[in-house]
Image (cartoon, rainbow, N blue to C red; front, side, top):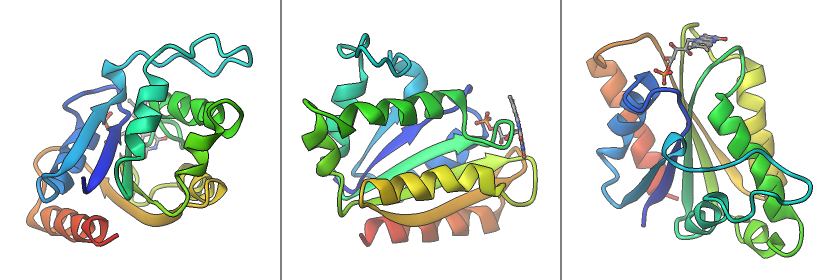
Length: 169
Ligand SMILES: Cc1cc2nc3c(=O)[nH]c(=O)nc-3n(C[C@H](O)[C@H](O)[C@H](O)COP(=O)(O)O)c2cc1C
């Protein structure tokens, strides 16, 4: 499998999905998951949600060398769906699921993002880059698009080039 792609947006067919799918069209061997279609509860110190969809998704991430996380910029940050997913990564830093977190080492994390400003704010970017580092993953960088509606030829070229980088890991 080329990659596991995880979409966290409040719209299944919104701008972030549009940009992600422009990348994935060049990566047919990718598992695409929409966090909004899963049942993933907030982090709980008591592991109250341990039987929800998070652990199967975490295990699915181990099947590929590249993990693509797609989020819109919502209030200078990642979407709430993506933040809940990030918080739940805590589950795989401690026993009994720590071995899952350890196996992320060596993979490459890519970010796909859309927003309303010309450049994604640092407050959006840093959690992706820093979290990759925390798990000893490489951060492969971000494909960012400002704007809405149909992709331009330039957007499509950028998406194709990004897909090539993902395929190359
Ligand atoms: C709740 C919300 C908060 C937003 N906050 C920001 C923001 O802080 N910075 C920005 O550039 N765009 C912001 N936007 C615009 C979105 O990032 C932009 O429209 C994005 O492409 C939407 O992607 P989606 O269709 O996947 O939701 C916000 C949009 C929403 C709905």
